[in-house]
Amino acid sequence: MSAVVQIENIDIVFGNNSNKTLELMDAGGTRDNILSQTGDVVGVHDANLQVNEGEICVLMGLSGSGKSTLLRAVNGLNKITRGKCLVRDGERMVDMGDCDEATLRHMRTHRVSMVFQSFALMPWLTVLENVTFGLEMQGMSKKERTEKATQQLKMVGLDKWADKKPDELSGGMRQRVGLARAFAMDTDVLLMDEPFSALDPLIRSQLQDELIELQERLKKTIIFVSHDLDEALKIGSKIVIMESAKIIQEDVPEQIVLNPATEYVEKFVAHTNPLNVLRGNSLMTPVAELEVRDGLHIAGDGVSLKLNGTILDKAFVDGNEVSVLKWDTNVNIDTLPKDVVLLVPLDISMRDAVEIRYHSNHLMVLEKGGECYGILGDHHLYHALLGKHFGNDEDAAA
Ligand SMILES: Nc1ncnc2c1ncn2[C@@H]1O[C@H](COP(=O)(O)OP(=O)(O)OP(=O)(O)O)[C@@H](O)[C@H]1O
Image 1 (cartoon, protein in one colour):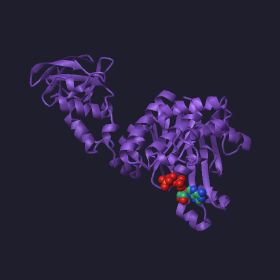
Image 2 (cartoon, protein in one colour):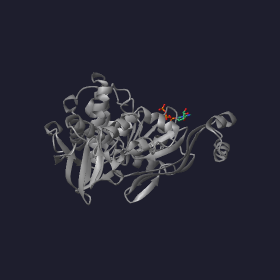
Image 3 (spheres, protein in one colour):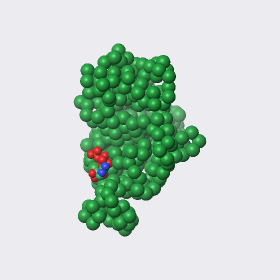
Image 4 (tube, helix red, strand yellow):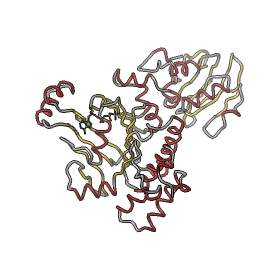
């Protein structure tokens, strides 16, 4: 995978005694300790992070944990005290903390753009002019930039509002203009600092969906700051958790929920909705762990399975054979018959699994490439809903 942003051992210190502060940081001093000794605030402490092309990397953590400080290092808005923040510029990597003004300007106009929480629109310009503004800095002709901006406004459903001023728009619409402006710049990297947090939940969820959709089409590399884990899990392909200026966990969403690295992460995770994150393969009981009686695998809830090697041959409910039906996301769950055993994809989302179980009478068998991997029943789903899926809880086996 190719890195677009490569953060290497970054420390960011606010204050006038950075040499002394770095010494104290290296000696293991805490933030509070350092503040009282030097008066400096440690914004980021020894952060390492690689963000690859097409990823949405979400920086998550409590207020003051250093998310915005780290984000702002990527476009050179925050001075890096020590370490490197490399951003790809064609064939080379530019160190945003150690480049001349012209390079920094080039990077900000062509490689890295930013969407702010406060929208940061210019109130005296129209919606269209707000979007074309950055394109003018890129040296684009008037005709070209009007075309491009109109196209981006269309993408966020605001082309009819092009001539309005920002104060004639709602908060959600203004943030859409902010998104259109950032996407119009067509930079490889988009930095988004809590862009949706000022919006009400419905609009927020809608904009999250739109961002995911836009990203699928445009394949940008996005670094997104949020203090809402549900938002992070929904949009992030990678989650980075920060606490007290340090990165304490970096992983894919499902692993953050299944294996929180510390109590701090566990506290965040405890309040998330597992339906949106967990998948069948991390909840199931593997076929190998099922009891075998008289040549049948006992799946539980009255269901037993006859396997031919790893292939499901027959299914029985209370000793009577029932049909086996394959389900995938192209099949409408509402149309599924009730008295069948369903073969579902190994990585089925928990939301689909719960919905299937709501419509059918029996547990599911997880398959991939025709081979059976495990079973997923009520016990597994309740287990996850109750947050008992942390660690290696033995109780997970039905
Ligand atoms: N320009 C600055 N000057 C001095 N201290 C700063 C500056 N910017 C940030 N800090 C400090 O650095 C620490 C990290 O702040 P930062 O804004 O990165 O946190 P955050 O995780 O983004 O928080 P929030 O979710 O509240 O925005 C805080 O203690 C903050 O006070």
